[in-house]
Image (cartoon, rainbow, N blue to C red):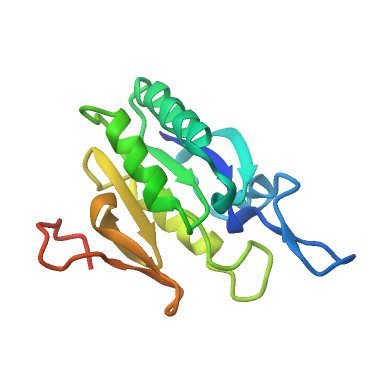
Length: 178
């Protein structure tokens, strides 16, 4: 049995539809009920609910809290998956990288473009891929979305395509990066 620390920060992956006004909001913890849908017979997930906010509303204090929590969890020696809103995922990933002078585990950022529970949601796929990626990614901070792996320093969200892409193809990268 292998252990993976999962830190939840909110974002689209946990948004819920509000019938009264048609908005999408981060109100309730929804991730745990969806985690039961992924078959992970040899994985023990240790979940930490840190916050449940839209990443556009995250401030520096929130990023510092995420980075501090990752640094504390890293001491346990297990890989870490951080669910996060896609709009500022890279910014928080870079804050984590700066806080970890010498990472000893893989820290994987993931999220969703469409909330869990919605038709065509990518949340469960991205979460399963991030957990799987803990098997082979070396220590460092990574973005795992839509079947692709990016070093956090060379990733950006492409709003038009609704996915992530390489920031600069000329930068040195890992062979895992698309």
